[in-house]
Image (cartoon, rainbow, N blue to C red):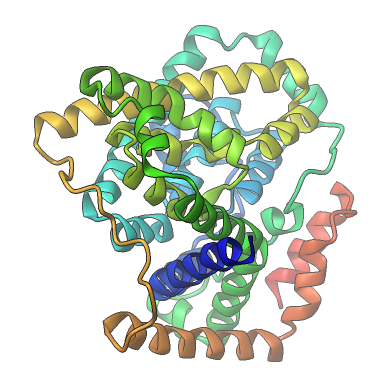
Length: 392
């Protein structure tokens, strides 16, 4: 028993070592984008469900944090401030599926084809969701969501969602390199880690356990690897269900996706699994608090269909273009740590992370972290916090 646990932990550790530099790079780039793109006025930019507004929502989402909980909280906040409901949902899809750190991690761990699939399927999934909303979203559902949203019940990462320290003056380069900009970048970097370490750690531990303990033939049977045509349809249908039950969201599900790919899930199944971090059980419970039980069931149905159909389309498009990798041995872990390019990159990026953390500690970061983490803030206090953050 101890040997089995040790094997799983070793796999989790080597997997962590394999992706550490990519995670730090992704979070650093994400922090830079958040520091130069303001959350202010987001609601004003999303007044309706027109194609242009949806495109703006996708751009704003891609420029925000990849934390699923923060994305969902921010979408509700925007909705309460007058943003269109469909546009707010498009924003939260983009902020978990079209962000840099996810693309970098997928490329490093699984290959560029998966990054391309994510950034091709993501917009497609949003288009499908918007079309389904046009067909099925009634004013009555929106009104029910609004009434519940106005109650202001707490979810997770509320403080992170409302925090805005972005810099407005000067060119993008001046914003990045100014003292204020450096402070904002270090704060966003640490805040994102603080909000996601449980998901990333959980994802790595689950992935290590599954890689170590679940025999390959189980996955191959479950994903119908012996029935190639059927497997193409089964993967996108079952991928989101595996995600819902795994609880892991945001970039934390990439190591798990690698294990599933090695196990035999279809290409489209991996994509559907990655898309589904917005319907994991804890987030479904947050939808219930935010928008009511009826609306959360409605969102689950619409989101699931959007994810499965978009992933199925990616499966056939990439298949037709011969872009699906033939090898299923994704190098998700090494048996031990060696002196190679991964180690060198990890040392470089760990040094960068240390610099950012020191800057964070020196510039009032811990106080802001406490503010972000405490979920007891009432809505009327938030503007004061945002104002405080702005000048931090």
